[in-house]
Length: 109
Figure (tube, rainbow, N blue to C red):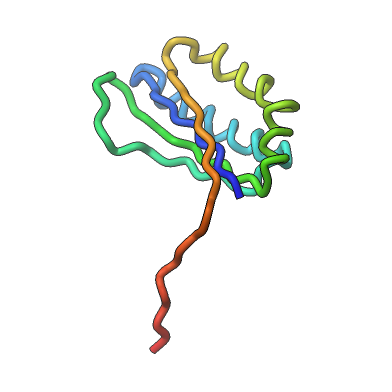
């Protein structure tokens, strides 16, 4: 399994507008069929920039799904945010491969 992680620093002046937009954008990304889930998280470490930082983690079942997203959908889906928020939004992307997941043992009383 793969995680496509998008980290974004959002200028405070557009923060509320961006939150509304991203709540609509994430379902558009999921609608491509390349990912089976997404998590929107807020980064709690204070940045030097005067903004708010988020990370969105999209989970893909395979490398092929991720490559297919890049080839067929990424450019189109990135354009909307770039045009709308321009220099008020800074982003970078990382790819993670899940090697193994660990869960705590549950004790049933």
